[in-house]
Image 1: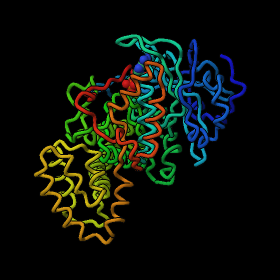
Image 2: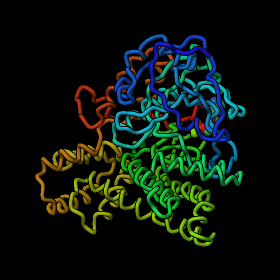
Image 3: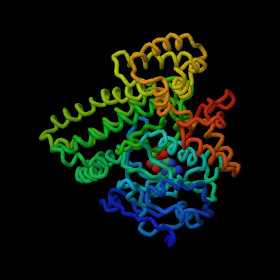
Image 4: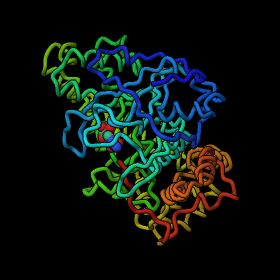
Amino acid sequence: MTTAAAIHISFDNSYARLPQNFFAKVEPTWVRAPRLIHVNDELANFLNIDPGQLHSQEGAEVFAGNCIATGSEPLAMAYAGHQFGGFVPQLGDGRACMLGEVVAQDDKRYDIQLKGSGPTPFSRQGDGRAALGPVLREYLVSEAMHRLHVPTTRALAAVLTGEAVLREEMLPGAVLTRVASSHLRVGTFEYFSARKDTTSLHTLANYAISRHYPEAVEQPKRYRALLEGVVRRQAALVAQWMGLGFIHGVMNTDNTSISGETIDYGPCAFMEAHDPATVFSAIDRQGRYAYGNQPKVMLWNLSRLGETLLPLMAEEEGSQEAALATAYEVLNSFAPLYEAAYLRIFRAKLGLAQEQEEDAALVKDLLEAMAEGRADFTLMFRHLSENDGFGAREQFAQPAGFEAWHGRWLARLTAERVTQEERNRAMQQTNPVYIPRNHLVQEVIDAALRQDFAPFEQLLAVLDKPFQERTVLQRFAAPAALEQRVLQTFCGT
Ligand code: AMP
Ligand code: MG
């Protein structure tokens, strides 16, 4: 493996300093003809990487894995996971390779990882590669989520490999460079738990605490505090997803982060017409990961994390029984935390700064009217944010339910102490105009398959300011026309 002399990244690789059973040292596989699709200059700057040096053939070679920047110690992380409810004791990075970590301008540590960089000891039957479509989808959706203020992994670069990958058909290969505040997952804990390796669990838990929950160190029961921290962040995260109509699509425990960031954008999608049973993922035949199931699934995933921490909590609690009681207590806090976050989010979406008892019912009844009237989730809330929401009526195929609700809402607004203008301005900061609608993402992918990346650049620019309406961009705000609808999404793995 050659080193990239002209690329300067100040790596400091804490994960590579962990014991050897935490990862496998790997080298990305050489590819034929790396070509840059996009570099995220703003993110590079944030990571203290000079973006200028990345816009070069050497930059493309680094992001394709053909050469390695000085200080990088590439590795594939070990993890396990529950996939659709079934436990797999060994998964691991089968097509990803962590290049290393950097400390960014917020003084926090971030992983830089290549996704689609070739086989690793964890690849099982897979080819270790990624196809162009899923790389572009992850790029667009993760960056959109960031602009929508949702904790998420991010995209630093995308490159073409110049090689084809075989999926249902031959497709152009690509590599995504992903940035995360770490790639620790619930599945990382499950990996050591399944091996009854309490020593490694200690090491991992302490590492997770130092990286994500440093305040837990001061707590008398730090592993309890770790579980509390993950529960708190994930409850808030799922509430944010729900507030945007976002469907993750593969909420397996290996895709559930310890940091509380959205991770692993596979068959994810934003719902258009509001329906809690919405599922896009082609492999989710039972609807396990449907929109309305996400909070329940997250609690299930966090329960798996709680189980892995039992031996550590037993030490600090003094007994198995006490540890179990603590785990239950912490996990039982998920529902109230989630509900409070959810209500906070939907109050803001409805422009309610005051808190009133009946607000929960007001939210619930609106969502029911939306489900009944097949209202577009995003546009409904956006139109509600303009001129007291009379335009929202047009989003309903059958507006009767909405009209009754609208009267109640207008009456409720009289309790607010702000002007309509102030309220609308605040609502427009939380109800986006632009989301990465499925058909728009598909259009971008179709164009990219014809070597036309202009639509990708344009959509990326639109999603960069999701709350700022631009009349020339009307097309990007509209739901899919009947013939544009994309009803299924694929992992593409
Ligand atoms: P995902 O569904 O992307 O979260 O992946 C689940 C597991 O399958 C992880 O261990 C991945 O590393 C692995 N995997 C997914 N796609 C591939 C591939 N093309 N080659 C090798 N491993 C893969
Ligand atoms: Mg995954």
